[in-house]
Image 1 (tube, one colour):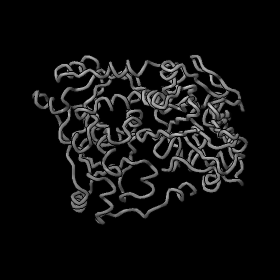
Image 2 (cartoon, one colour):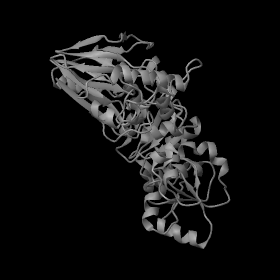
Image 3 (cartoon, one colour):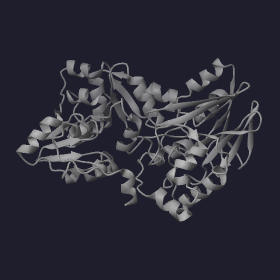
Image 4 (spheres, one colour):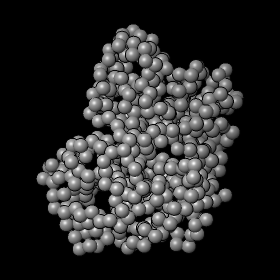
Length: 472
């Protein structure tokens, strides 16, 4: 028997490859399925099942392409109603895979169809739990994504409480937990950077698994402090439930290399949004007017999903030469399939063509401190509310990047805005968005709050542990 976690940092997502005696099950695959197919072929095995823990909101699963290419059976748990052929398993049903079995555990709460898969080894021992978005390391799935007219967030949290205590916490402590996500995912709020753990350890340290916890306490703690989910989440659910284009079709369409003239024409004729995927400090030195910087080196796909509300929006890409395919693949993972092409030769080609470009100013943290000593400055901290509440420059304004579009009118255009985040990735996104909306007086603070704090030159609020904040 072989278990392999295939972890994708950009999405903080874990897919799983399970193999026994020439038969393979893939759990929650990413949209690009070639690696799974090749891995099974290399082992001389065939993919028998594609197991889905639920209709994912934060990425488009590869279940359809994988089933089409291999003949594998797509499996969901009870209550799932996909618009394609799939096996809807019953609670407690066992699927044979070589000499091992996979038991279906219906665990509603994150969504009503949410299901975990329990692996029983060759002797029948309960060995591994593939917990999807029901149980994370250090956290549990958020219960606010599948709300309906007759089903509130508190209702879902109540279901999750029962699922954890009747289906999961009764399992042996030595069962290994393999979750669907880790730290950085928007599907939870308190996930660990660790991507596996024993169930026994989670019973000791996961706040949501406290043995003495009442349902009322659970509902209060699990729902406390949840930020609004990205707007692309329900669109990804629809794609996963209803179907989508093959990723090969998407990559072919988006893989068109456009000359500067063709690129400019496409932008003007279609109203496509230009996403520049280069590093923040490279982007700052020269970029196409009205383009938005979302660096490929960070959590690129989730930030596109957060800042571009409609997955059907036409897009054009500016990349470092050679990174176009990576950008297209990451966009396809979250359902942004309408890429019209990329700038051939990158920004250098645009510059060489003599077309108009723009730049953004930046200052060091030390320079910012000197300017503050000379007078009041309009400083905008674009970190998350929890980051800001824990520690920030005294007296500055906090507008989290996630909510910038909703609060842009609060920012004066007649004053210079000094923008910072934690390290510089998000602040350049914010600055590029503001520039595209007509803000001319913008300065990015290089190195962000990390650099600001290290100078020792600023009045910083007393540090408050986020855990303390939640309990206050």
